[in-house]
Picture 1 (cartoon, rainbow, N blue to C red):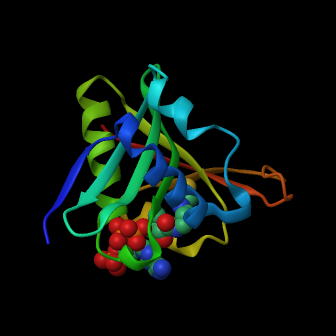
Picture 2 (picture 1 turned 90 degrees about the vertical axis):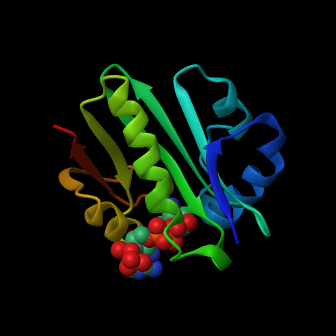
Length: 147
Ligand SMILES: CC(C)(COP(=O)(O)OP(=O)(O)OC[C@H]1O[C@@H](n2cnc3c(N)ncnc32)[C@H](O)[C@@H]1OP(=O)(O)O)[C@@H](O)C(=O)NCCC(=O)NCCS
């Protein structure tokens, strides 16, 4: 099957909301997906698989010379196929081309899949924010320097 990695469009909104629910369940972030598609500082990319539709997405914010990962998720039946890694690399490559010097993100320390993915890309732990999430869980702040 052929998969395309592209910028998200308004037509992807329903698929993105479904992926967001599958990926985050009760922890769906406050930021609305529809807003992300219109914010000038946000970039949303998707993996669109010819047979399965939109199977993964990433939302990043470009702030000054940084790119911040807001969300990344892959549909459960399409995980471990390299989609999240490909999305991150694409988002970072474009941000870097536009002058970004580092990527930042927050992640739940118990989210082993995500932490392993980020470490595999070279992210290192910068800090720990205590009780960062609504449910009281801490966040790890991780950084990837491009230069
Ligand atoms: C985290 C998540 C986005 C990874 O998506 P994915 O498309 O399956 O990731 P990839 O296939 O690109 O994985 C790349 C690497 O990440 C690591 N990884 C991914 N899932 C893993 C798991 N379950 N266990 C251990 N390592 C894992 C591995 O190093 C993997 O490389 P490998 O498959 O060659 O070993 C996905 O599990 C998900 O949607 N989770 C729910 C939403 C979420 O928690 N998002 C992150 C917080 S914003």
